Image (cartoon, rainbow, N blue to C red; front, side, top):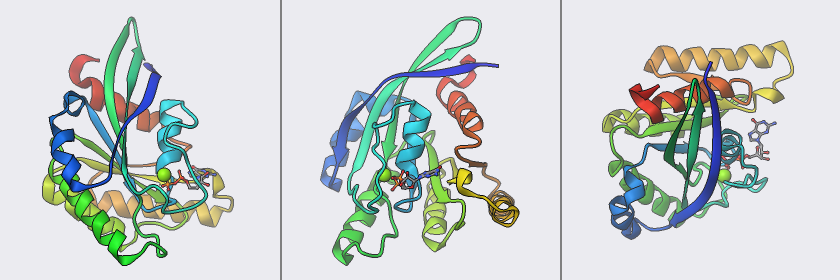
Length: 213
Ligand SMILES: Nc1nc2c(ncn2[C@@H]2O[C@H](COP(=O)(O)OP(=O)(O)O)[C@@H](O)[C@H]2O)c(=O)[nH]1
Ligand SMILES: [Mg+2]
């Protein structure tokens, strides 16, 4: 079993307006294996990024939804320990969350334009994670995002977060139903976090190292 270590992850850039996108798409970092985290605000994007990179304050997680209004980019190195150590630099994006009611209409519209232009410029091998609160399931905004990924031919999967907060058998089976409904209807993978972080890491390994492993 391969072991994944992460090192040196750091914030490199924040994108606030579509006008900044062309510059980003020309940067050398844009050629790195790219993993993008989208999802409703408060769904656990930042917490997942911090857990996967083993870096507590990297993406910052907050109790105040809707605060991150820019696309935050991070780079760092994956180290895969098998017989020898393989290294790969990757790029991560933490997107501003959608669906927070208190955000003014104008900001929501700006968000839509920024995100759509961002997705349209992504290389087709970008891996997209959508975080969904496992207790709630997908809503129409998540489905709209999935339609966008399907339209753009971008690979995606869903992570149902806060699995550690599911206490009753009823809550647990509800999340299982969400997962089954999602995989049945899309054919895309779905995971729970933090309980299935290893599976999520395996997907990241395959995505980042490709056939080298
Ligand atoms: N127990 C638990 N809490 C979580 C989990 N993921 C996120 N949270 C909490 O949910 C809130 C929002 O998380 P955050 O990562 O900031 O969501 P974001 O807005 O999507 O980036 C924070 O208070 C987190 O501590 C999880 O897997 N388990
Ligand atoms: Mg966040």
